[in-house]
Length: 188
Ligand SMILES: CC(C)(COP(=O)(O)OP(=O)(O)OC[C@H]1O[C@@H](n2cnc3c(N)ncnc32)[C@H](O)[C@@H]1OP(=O)(O)O)[C@@H](O)C(=O)NCCC(=O)NCCS
Image 1 (cartoon, rainbow, N blue to C red):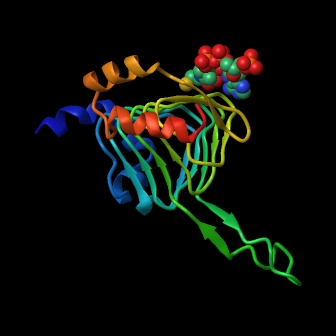
Image 2: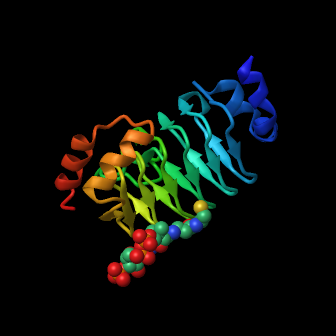
């Protein structure tokens, strides 16, 4: 019943992307997907709740999981595969159908700026901010600010005391100790 109440908010998205809402593993609630986007491999998409994806996205998703409360700026590119490129004696065109796939995961409460590209096999950690025009080639730790090509964490979002307080107030898959360990692993 409560799900029915949330349908009007995403009705326009359902009309825009009917195959996604019909075929995806899960499409969540209160999700708004802007116009001019394109999904491929619908069956491998798993969306949480309260997701906003701005206009003009290209999502070629082999096992894409987007968590809850994720905001994504315009011009997003997600590519979950590369074409093979290392066979001697074959042109790239000849081997174009040999592809290497890997999943992409965007955890809860992430903000991704405009014109960001996310390549195969990465996870963007909970609560992380990805700066505009970044190219994400490796996994990004939670609760960090990450920018650039290749996209790297440049700073923590909070100091340690703020992080502990923050995690007492928001739903999280991490303990403060786990986040601190991941920060340390990223050299922050
Ligand atoms: C990342 C961002 C949030 C800024 O975070 P911030 O913590 O305030 O970072 P600062 O502005 O202090 O910048 C820190 C450093 O990162 C650099 N930087 C900031 N954003 C960057 C980006 N997108 N790409 C590359 N470098 C960037 C700054 O130049 C600065 O470098 P310096 O230390 O050499 O001077 C912001 O720059 C950004 O990209 N916002 C996205 C905007 C957007 O796309 N909005 C669409 C609506 S969804």
